[in-house]
Length: 231
Image (cartoon, rainbow, N blue to C red; front, side, top):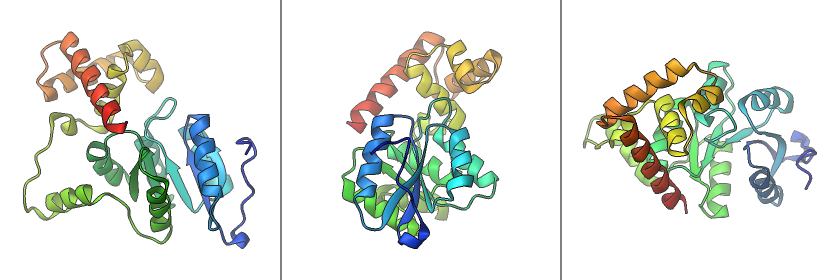
């Protein structure tokens, strides 16, 4: 399949149209092949960042959007928030390598209807896609139970320090763990160095970290834990 020419989709075909927002070409093609082999699903467009995704939503009119959290220059959660602020009601499924217990609640708050780890078997991904297309939501039993407990004020759910970070702080913490400097993060997020430094200070306070070397070490260790969890 040529990803520059995704399969032509038509609602008359009876197949649901899916927009893939993913910045790794091989992953995009693999997902397109998996979805295209079904009788009821097809990929109508690809996007690798928020700008191209927003254009595709308007031109391709998908029935479902699959979004990765880590895009070229943005966070996929910010794209979901942007879609909802623009009154786009198309269901969104987050498909990511990042820990579900940390990111799934954030995805739900942003406006996504489902979350699946990239390491999950194909049948689970397809089940999630069809669940959202039928108007439902798709999160793991553990995440759903934790969210319900928090919502109804029942059994308290202990939050890790990292979970106390805002979405933007967590994104910056992730970038620090990847070895990016403050200036590199500033250029990636199109924010001033001063703004990134302020976020770094907030992260240190929330995580109980005293200095920048400790922050870098904590971020690297957390990134390594995420990689092991996704593997």
